[in-house]
View 1 (cartoon, rainbow over the protein chains, first blue to last red):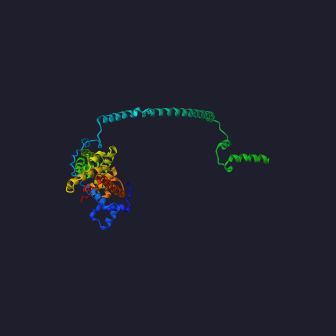
View 2 (view 1 turned 30 degrees about the horizontal axis):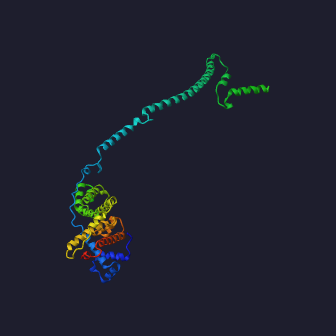
View 3 (view 1 turned 90 degrees about the horizontal axis):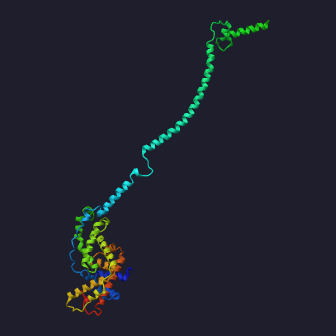
Length: 200
Length: 183
């Protein structure tokens, strides 16, 4: 029933909207007569025209009263008191349940730092003390032995008889010279003695 | 006006009611089987909806067509809940032959039959007929209000008029009155 009108029906529709039967041209009158008849056209035209006044005077509408809850409501909507109180109580309860101290598995900041520092100190102290003590002791003992071995000899030399007069050649031999044999007169004298003995 | 309503609801809605309430009341009376009390309630309900949902209005469109779109949807929902007018009422309006001279009485009777035959139409055809021939909306405005195409609106009007005249003719089959010759 809601299909689009064909061309003839659409022309009829346009005529019904605009012209009474006595306003039709001869050609239009013939067209209407073929499609629906002039009586039918007249009745439909009267129906359309009289519809505008068929209901007479419209009564006055009742004055509109703005609801009081709308003016002071929360975001334009009213909420019952018991619902509002329930929402507040639920919010407070949720806040108390989720307070940080009550979260399972979570410890205070101070206790955590004490545990960490105590654990670290124990491990490091034990390792360092063992290594260092052994090494130092051995070294010290070794040095001590060397020191002891050397010292008596040095002390004996130093504590030796200083009244004995050594021959000149001994002094020359003991005294430090240069490296070159030309500078060493004692060595030259020894060599001359050997040559003289061989020459005999 | 609707933008002002966002800030001053009470004053703006009162002004809108003053401008449009009578037109809307007339529309509801025609659509709701001439039940004036129900139509008054619908007008109140409609302005409450305007107050609550004014943010849904598109300022680029006409407020008038938007309001009537809401009104048409309210009537559509009403039709889903309640059936059409009973046949008994239609038969009580049966035309009796009236002499040609009593033109006013003929007209009154004709109008009564018109109102009754209008109630017999399907909701979509009735809405389109009322908006066009009683509320004087243009075809394009009716298309916007009902959400139908222009061709569909024309088709609905054409068949609605034909059906109403068929019912009118059924109550004067012998054409004994000058009903059909009103000028």
